[in-house]
Image: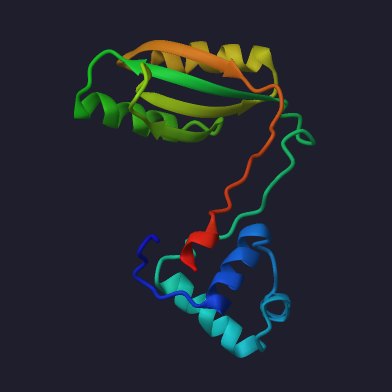
Length: 162
């Protein structure tokens, strides 16, 4: 079992699970779902925020409804493995709204994996040619196009905390 700095009881885990699946719940709705009254529920959420376990709440948007129909997984290879090259790459891609995810990885030929969302192939071509390939140090790009999202979640597996 993974160690946490904050001891989580059953109610804490229920709060986290509920908020992972619907961060827009009001305190009253959350309290009802986890079987607490509003004040203790609010105090627990505040304690989880103060402990750094809850780091924010977001609204999930429908990618297709917004016309962002193409998701690409990009493998990026760098020419040199220096801290300066990596820092520049990471700083640059972090500023691109199209990049939803950027991981520095090991165990394969690529140095980075990116998840990119754009409207269509033309937009991807522009993104690739005008942004990614212009970053100093990028020596290789391999693109894989997502045909179907079988599972796409940001929810963490809380079952390990029991």
